[in-house]
Image (tube, rainbow, N blue to C red):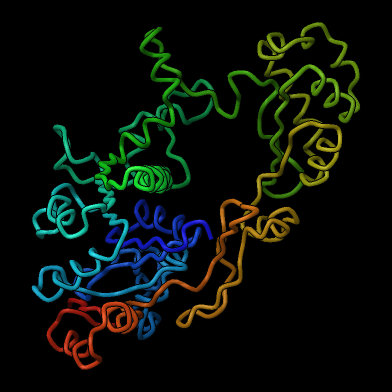
Length: 415
């Protein structure tokens, strides 16, 4: 696997950082997820069984969160309380044999715990460290706390999401800033590893999650600087392609997306719809005309799709070289032949949850294919493996960590 032999010490929590380390784990990195029994990853209960009434939670609900178990496959899991002297010493020892350290706490927390980059680089001079608080480690906003849910709004992305001619911003269906920042962090780690291979030098990567989100609309920011005009909402339309949209099909809330990128594709679309008169209409002969008369085209397409199956529309159009695909719900994604053929979902048997299909590799590489190697760790599941086998601690000393409040496999839950 591409990153076999690379060890990552992962202090990150929730989504952005864990997404980054999942991508690295997918490619073969040895990722060690660090929690403590006092401060475990909140994703162990957010949108998980921890939100159920007490009688339905089960004895170890912190091991059965779908969110957590999706983001932490192929990782080892340990608990070590960094505020305890022995816990800090354990973590420092792990740093000494790790290539990468990543955290997404609020700015300055690792320094306050005595585990900042300047300290850690003395332990491991060629260490690559990623720090990814919401607003980075410098600047006037660095001490503020923020999550991915707010990055779309602060970054201006939400102002561009919405329906045509409606200025109201619309949030996307996910906390967009988290996965984007995670992907950028993983890419930064890859670049730093490549640089270290050539120079032997480690580095500190200061990644602002807000700036990471903003870069996804870079061309629109540049356009505003040049023209002073806000991009505004354009619904499902495209700045170049036309027609481009989402059209209702037969059934309850069934839709198909269609994107026409050339005059030839427009001719094919008209042919498949059985509307040759549209292809010959002078209003729609070129891309400018189709943009100008997009409403009329949308009306004609909607009339054609409204009593048709979305998959049939896709097949008919794709066979003629026109980009189209249904808007799939959960069951549709699971049963989609292309998704199944690509192995997007992999069968994972978690010891606390049982067997599930979980998201697999995001990409396929011919020489170094990645894969889901094992399910997400239960809390502190690999303490003995990491502290005992990797660090060489005697079994009795590992057991003492529990009695001394340094480690464990059950969280300390408040009243």
